[in-house]
Every structure is written in C-alpha cells, then in structure tokens.
Image (tube, rainbow, N blue to C red):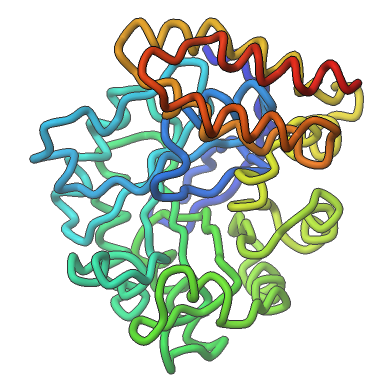
Length: 345
C-alpha cells in the first residue's frame, strides 16, 4: 500500500464488459522527458510533492527486451509512478507492460506524441496518430495482460492531418477498439519532418480550446492537458475545462513549483514544502547512491533550479555545476552550496 494519498474517480468503460473501473485521478503530473526524468530526478520530485504523478523517461520495448541495463529501475518512494513505453508491436508492448506491472508500476502510458526522426524510424511516437487502429490494438494488447491503467499521450494532430475531426476520429477509434479512457493531450500538432523535437515543442501553436472541446465531446474520458503550462495559476484555469494537468520543462527547471502543488491543487490544509528541508532530506539518498558508485553530478543536475529567484541561487548553481562532477565529489559539495543560500536568508 503506497503512502501517497490518491484522489479516486470512477469511469464507465466503453468496452465489452461495461465494467465500472476505479482509477486514481491524478490532477497533476510531471511529463516524461528524455534524459531528464530519470530515477534520481523522480526521487527528488517526490520529496517536493506526494500527490504528483511521476513519469519515467520514454523507454522503448527494444531496450526492455534486448537491453543489457535495467531500464525499469526506480525507488519505492517514487509511487505513484507511470512507465511510458515507446513501441508499435502489440505483442512486444504487452510483454513489457506485464513486466512493468510485476515491477510495481502504477500505470503504463503509450507514447503517441514524440516527433523525433529516431522515434519515427522505429515506427512509434507521433507518427502513430496516423494509425489509430494500430494504437488501439497496442493498448488492448497491454490491457489484456495487466490490471493497472493503460493510457495514451498524444498530440492534437500531425502534419496536414490537424483538423479537429482528425483528432476526434483518432480518440474515438482508440476508445471503441480498446478500453482506454485516459488520454493526455499535448495541445500542439507535430510536424514529422522539417522541425527538430525542440522546435516541435515551440513552433506549432498551442490550441488549448481544442483540448477543452475534446473533453466536452468525450465527457466519459479523463482528459489531461499538456504543453506550455508554466504556473499553478495557469493549471487552475485549465482544470476548469479538463481533468488533469501535465507540466514538463517548467516543473524541471523551476522545481519549487512542485513544492506548492499539494497545497494549491489537492488539499489546502497541506503546507507548502520547505525547499531547503527538501535538499537536506535528499542527503541520505545521495550518500546511498554514492556508495553504489553513482556520480554526484548525475543527481545534482536535477536540483540546480530549486532556488530560482531566491538570494544565493546563482552561487548555489555555480558551486554545484563546478564541483559536483569532480572526482571524489561527495555530500559536502551540496552542503557547501546550500550554505550559500541559507547564509543569505
């Protein structure tokens, strides 16, 4: 039993059994971000918020099945935690989903939103929006072997296939051919060629009203919105129209936002988390990881932005950036950096 409280909501499935299935309704999540939301990042984020749903980086089925490393490693403290899978082979996805459930993941998410060339060459990510029936088959194959939620993260369109009708047809096909009731919608379309992944996060215009309309037209679905959300005030505005918010780079680059999430979006009686206390609470984890051979910089890179806007923040970032990657760097580097903040308070 995880200690993190979960807000629950019941949804009626459109599948053959018409079951009433109880899902954890997470109003707020941190987006899966390649090279960023690794296990060290997620452990840190969990110290800041108990309620936020945390996602892994996207992990391909090939990496899980054929890779030499453990791509599913995480700490128990990270719950609730979702695994984002990349792939388009229903059998391979089902195999990986079953492994993930056995490892204790709380949700399996299928990536139908990443537009990078590498992802397209593997026939997964955003290009799958053009193959709605295949997406549905992938989701159904995973649902058949797990009893945790199987969800989809997607865009509002791809290339010239960017009409609202195209989006509705995609969602309707997935829903009708599987029991998927939970979607996270990145409110931008993706250009499959001509733009880099970074440009695809910035150049296609955001269209929040389209996602709001999707929720109106599919009221039985849980719809979360993603893309360009930079504050909890913005999140509150979105929550008047959709069920959940997924925040990406802003949460990573300015993680003090997460210290306010539980208080602002879940329960006003929960106090805002003290970010200095969070850094100190990270010490045992850092020391444990260092004893296993982890480099200090692999952990501290995720905490650089925690004091954004606070006196001493620049000195904090500089000290960690200049010293955490040195041979033999230990917890004293973090302690010294933290002193540069506390002495200014």
